[in-house]
Amino acid sequence: MRHTKHFLVFLCLLFIKPATIAASELDSAFIERFATSYLIEQFPSTNEEKVRISVAHLDPRIIIKPCNIPLTANIHDKNSTRNVNIKISCDESIPWKIYLSAKIEITKAVLIAKSTISQGDRLDESNVELAYIAINKIRGDKLTDTAIVFGAKAKRRIGKGKTISKKSICLICKGDMVTIIVSSDAFTIKSQGIALSSGNINEQIKVRNTRSNKVITPRVKAINQVIIHL
Image 1: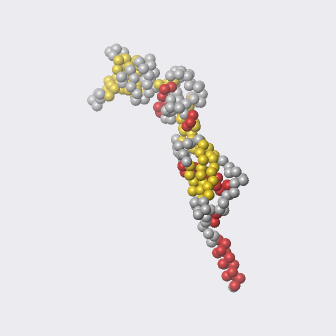
Image 2: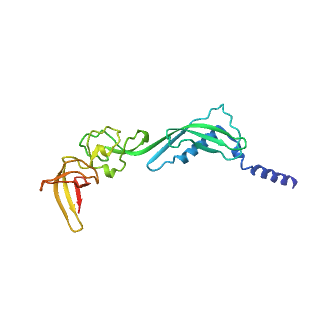
Image 3: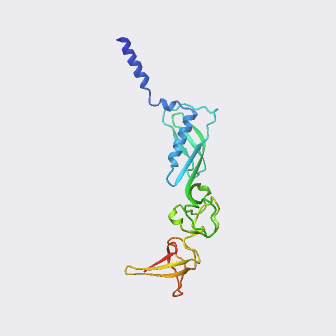
């Protein structure tokens, strides 16, 4: 019976360890994982953006002292999204800190040319696809919605892999024959016209009415359709 009691006491001492013991047993792998977890919280991935984080390995010559309280992490400038330095600190009575470098690549989903698109070609699923591009390589406002792009024509040649912007396409291009829709709550009138300028959805363009020869400025409604709301 005495041996049984001693065995039970031994088991209790074995499993009831101090809560701070994990924090005091530190190595380079733990520090690197801690830094990575911190950066993931600071730069979370979304449906529109993906984040790739790469934390550099600690110098094996660095001696990591114990820490009996939770570690803290901090970066000096969160706006620097390419190369950052993470400060890992132990704020005990005798504090210490370690710095790690990391690379952060943020990519954004944008529409690109799946194959070379010649001037005047219609854009559709055969020549356009969604791809993730590093944000530091994206210039200007790039398109992400296929509903805006599919059916539009290329204003100029778009090379394979190049991003697609409003400046490179037109839902209605200069010289296109268009249907002019004049709409109100009481009636709708349709007529024909010729586009005198190019534009995309909801943009105003100049159109010459072929019946009256007047120049009007309707908004682009759809492919080869413009509208004026009365």
